Length: 133
Image (cartoon, rainbow, N blue to C red; front, side, top):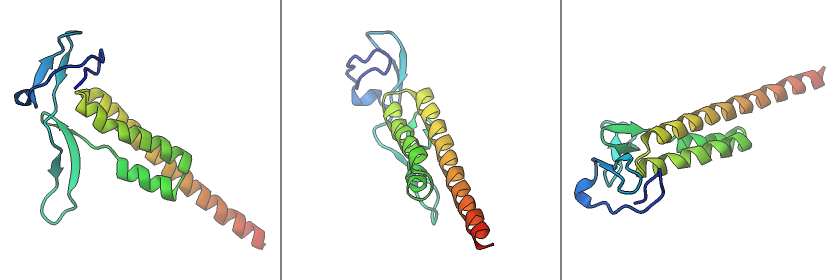
């Protein structure tokens, strides 16, 4: 694992997973994530996987980003996919704040893509109605 602050390699032993450690190079504190994603959701509900750092979870919005890219506005959806893909990497590096920021940006770009798609549909309907008259 490399430090997200200085980029240098750190040797993390399995017993340190899920704890906070200090980087020996830059002296910054890092939360080391547990080795696996944990399922979230009850019986009968769709199981959703979120990466965890300690007891904190961050939703990555990747599914939503892919859907709005396919069905709404592709340029905005691609930006949403890029930010959604960054969430798990930042959590793996112990950067909880960065993961939350990337997730929030992914959510905002998903919303922008959806609104852009709806606006295009409404504009098409208005143009079609105007052309009939």
